[in-house]
Length: 407
Image 1: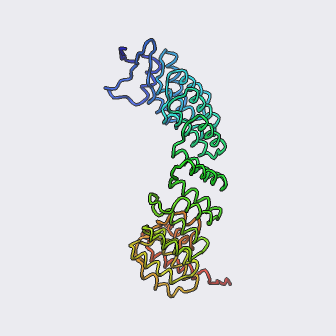
Image 2: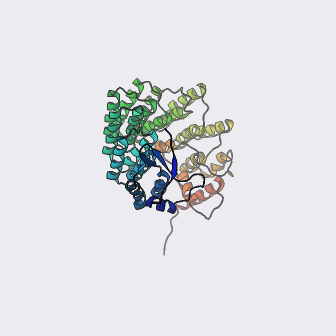
Image 3: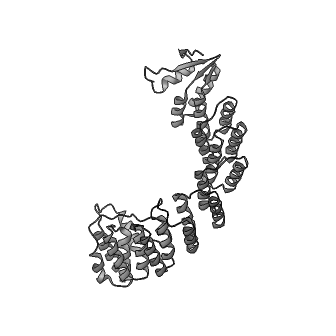
């Protein structure tokens, strides 16, 4: 079919177009004739109004197009529907959606994703279900992706029952759940569900033989740590398989943490040796988990050996490592011997915090660590070093036990 391009006639649309950014000369605004209908693409114009939150102007473009006999292109309708949904104008959005459904339009997955995000932001989950069912009735090839997006939408907002029902409906329709969707399903149970619900979801993931992703491992570990279920954490890690190398040292570090949090020192040391013998090289988080346990238990010799091992492996200490040494000596009132340990570390380095945050969830932050973070907020000090931080902390530490008499 031959398509002719004509310049827009003078009407209210052109008046609005003049107010927007002037298009390049080689890209004039055009009307595309298709049969007896005139289709206009004003998606960029409506998008600009949407960003500026100019509700009336954007709506006016759409109304003027209908009055003057111009049919908006489907891309324009998608932009307009997202604009309505994001701003809570749901009746108008429903009108656009019905117009899209009555055409032969196949919505892009990206459009459905943004639409579900907008509905989820306003907690309009009934609208998500309606869109899902409309797509289901049309039996489109993108249906598995739409179900996956709905599951993620419900999960992000903590709607576990809706997420569960959608997953069951997806399976009942004969649609296969991909690995990413199955992992997302488990992820949201880890964040919002109970440990029992999380473990049931993990059992289903195992039966599907999908590989559990690193993000989900972290979420499940965090759930166990919050409930102080360190034995269950260890059992979960063994079930996942400590030999997996695609997640680095994460599994081994969590295993060491499960023992360190309960101060089972012999078991922790045994697992550390097994880790090294299995071909894994300890990283900073590995060393700091052990150092924190040694520091809390006042095991100075083991703490010194751990620092020597770090030096041998060329692992640079961070703020947590220094805090383990300082807190261990000061807790036992051995501040005069502090230089013996600190001389083996570079005190003139700039402070860094590179330890994996899950360590703090289980073992907390030491006093030196928290005081140093408070010192960082002072803008008077331009250049911080470990030496300066320790000097200020020692001054603060010795002063707090002094009694000042007011006469």
